[in-house]
Length: 445
Image (cartoon, rainbow, N blue to C red; front, side, top):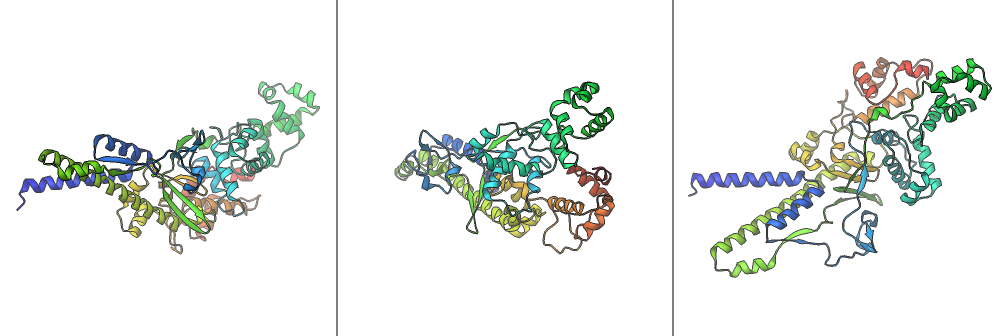
């Protein structure tokens, strides 16, 4: 019969294994790679098995050759680093993509270019890299790139994706309906003189009255030279996606992107030696290392199964968003865990610091699990997400009378008709967070 000490040791060992298993689940691809190589260093029974014995790869071996990089004619296992923006409460990237999410008219090539252009913006939201260089790096034509830039420049905030401050101001002037030769001339050639107050010089050179000039200058002062300042600043962050969602021929494919650093196995030579070893200490040591290796292998496989299950749930519940045919639904980790019959903390660990590459861009896994706001009548199966609220508010504002814009109280009443219940104060805070003007500001536009 097992004594109390043995029971306590067994419980402690089990607890340690559970902790290690949970730690493995929370690791991203890079952390898992480092962990496996550390285990390989510490455990002589572990060997890392590459995908192939040789270093070269055939292009046909991979689901998509663009996911791997070449050098000196050799295609390597490690996928290229993907540039995404830092995660903000509401990043400029999310803001721009959300304005395109309802459109079905863009091709996959255009969506790739949209993401590429957005990731090329500087901290002020300007596109400072020459278009020819961008087109070369994106392997596309200048005209096609310019077409996508023009679409992005039509979004809010007015002036985003401009190549300079003057261009951003001209875009804003056009959006406000006051774009003439004098406005353009003042913005392009006379901003330093305006700042220095040299109005007589400007009036004389442009041959316009001081009164008219002052009117134009007052208008220019209403424009924002840094239209993306409200979204903060970011620097590009280069990452390797942990999970890849592919959509081809009306079918989804989930790829857990951990094959490029190889898998682990057990050294057969040590196994054979252990079977014939007469030294008890050596045999016990080898058996312990074998059990440790098997445990790590099982944890990695369990990690893969969990990631696939959670990924399937994301695709099932957020398919419209992933295909740009609908908004992101408000689904909490608690609701997802209940449907998957797992603990909410498992969802959190599975998505912890994991990046998911999708047909419309690369997102942190936690992006797909947002609680959202409860619906009043619960007609829809999911909570209403911030993006749905944003789309509804923008739709309502687009149909309002220009001389009588809706107040926040009006918006609350109109949203209620769409089964979205928000207080006036909540709408005010929401509108400010998403850089939407109030009724007075919209009236003066």
